Length: 167
Image 1 (spheres, rainbow, N blue to C red):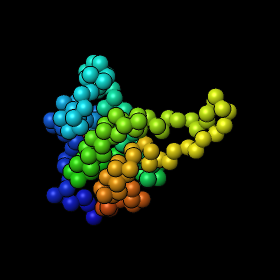
Image 2 (cartoon, rainbow, N blue to C red):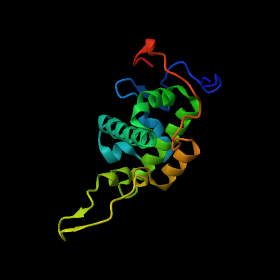
Image 3 (cartoon, one colour):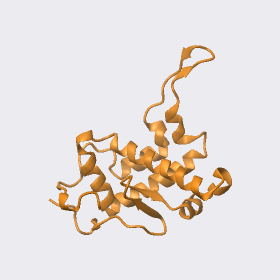
Image 4 (tube, rainbow, N blue to C red):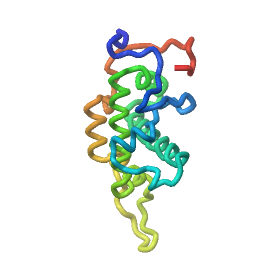
């Protein structure tokens, strides 16, 4: 069974909310849209437009890596295709990334995943955060509601390699 036409788009597209980075193979939030949806002035926090795009690219990578963590790595290309061609997934990714921007402003949000788990001053181990700390509680709920945490794909489909990476 293919992805139903009502949910399928022929190729990823850019609009006023997100753009698709072919090199990374993922959607990235538009800076103005992220500011309007979250209410946070990203330019004031990060200084330049280039810095804001870089941060939003990090946010996108956090979201995609979290989603990929639920599938076997052998299915990464198939998952990338599925995420880029499903309207429902596009909407879910957008919501997850908006939530990650909000989470970033609360106790560094997804940056918590970089904590080593060792307190060097006291030379003792501290509990490592679970992978839910990467996206937070709300992000985890969004991922669950959109089926990103499912081990299996919602639809059975195959990828036509004639288009290569130009999705």
